[in-house]
Length: 277
Image (cartoon, rainbow, N blue to C red; front, top):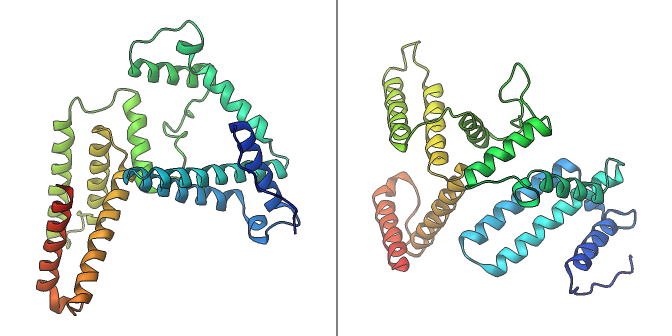
């Protein structure tokens, strides 16, 4: 047993130090076996999960939920810092110093004499500092060498498109992006109807369609992962509502009751619309 008493802190410094102390104790030899077993990879995966849980609370406008989930994000961040410090990789202080120094360096329009007139100019200045001052450039043989290879496909597509946009290779307006989506959809339908033709690759055409939709989402200013996450949640909520009504009406969920399920689906959608009015 570790002798520790929690105290509600009044300052950011004291609160962060208490979190750091608790994480250190959990990772100690007398701490928690589960916490000691965690690696930087497992905690990073937890961090992604907690970030999406925070996004859920933002979408619901739940302030208490946001407060709780943001605390979990900070916990996993602190856990990562502690793991690296234990491994003699770097200290928490070094990591914080690095990011503070970088923020000052990349904001000369705030902390020095550089001038900008728009957020677009800020991004251009930021990218110039990254490449010319910090030397963060692509390798000679791969324009996308700085795009993390560990990204899931959806996020990878978005990052590839964002990087291409930075050099000006982008659609002049949204009409062209929409036309590209329509073009890729027609190619999917063409491949679907001619699957015996060896020159048709339906899987590739489907990938091209997804890539085009990601591009449309990016062009309109949205994050495709968040957009899909919201759609997934909407489908879960709607079908769970259908599931509950079906149980009340003793309707089995199978293809023999497709007509009834469709009616229930419309009921759920109508109720959802009324609740928003």
